Image (spheres, rainbow, N blue to C red):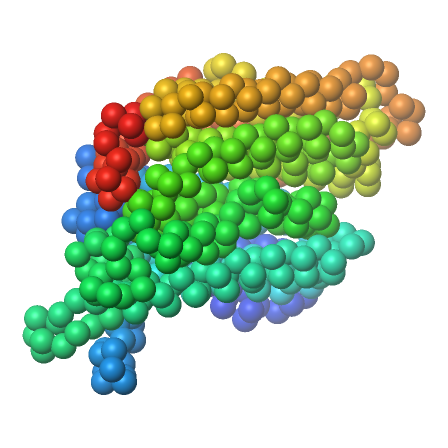
Length: 535
């Protein structure tokens, strides 16, 4: 097995070990889960260290790294359409390498955060480890069938983690999350089937026509069968195929108007699950659009660029306005996630190197910053058993270490220079403003979207004021400051936020070659000139 198989399937091995442990030994179950996720994080660091930043990836197998490919299933002589070929095909490039590291990091943080779970500990940690594998597998899969398997693997553990260990309305939140995501998955499956029957190659050893789920072959127009449903460019079926995949991914982001499941899921989910949901799961939607929609449907991508920019602007401003109206700490952070993911979409809509670089950076930075914010909410909820923003005040003197880390997370979220959130937001807005594709429209969209920056500063500073400044109510005199376990969760995230805010070059260097290749694929595949795309 290669290193990507280890980093993907190690949590499943951990899940098996956890299930074999006695259910009464809760500490052993917890520390076993920590051990497997810590080892996964270590492997992901080795992957980062061995990554060649000069290789592009995107739509050529030669550009991917740590590639592993083996035949998984082959069915010969099936009716008129030839052989079915399904491979275990994984690999990473500049789009996915930081997501692999982020998944491993957030999974470890979530496991440490889950030490407060007392109900059915064995089942909880087993499901959490299975969820880890589903997320990691989605980021490394290069076979569409395999991608879909990992995508669906995430659904079941998340449903139970919210539905069993969540808050008072956990069943409603879990079912809503399940139905929304499943609806998107059905649309995705239909497009996968259409692509499968449209793409084939001739097996050189047998001369047989072979249909395949290989995503890289699906990105090459030369592999489409003449007259097939997805053949050609700028056809209504290709636009429909793009929309089917886009909606499936948009629900996961979530993009307005598919966002309503997210606040309910966040409010009812345990702290660790909120951390995973905001830190990693939302990124799977934007990653899927960049990895699959853009290179497979470059013609439709160019056509839908302005609508995507409009949806991005709605996400940014609407999310910030609704966040400002919240008095529940968790709901505020949930709606802020909708707003910040809008920044990712805006960078993607720019369809130039600057904007997409900002989008991918924002995916990573939002993962670390929002993980800190949800952990911070969980810490105060464990002590006070309330998330009401108006219930607190004056916590800065009572909990100075907690307040210091919270201040870093809040200022990073509002995009303060010197912290990682500023760099990615700046690149996304600059890319969108500089986009020469539908230039006047994109400039107006970008200008409108900057309202989100002001609104985010407003609700973040207002929240900081309500919770930490002023006089401390007498009922909170017994509150204790952050402990060692909580510092272990938060300090590494804070260090990453500060480091990437001061010196983002290492991350930018890793993704630049792949992002430039992606922009070139969209340009050539859509027939739009490089000047129009602002490359």
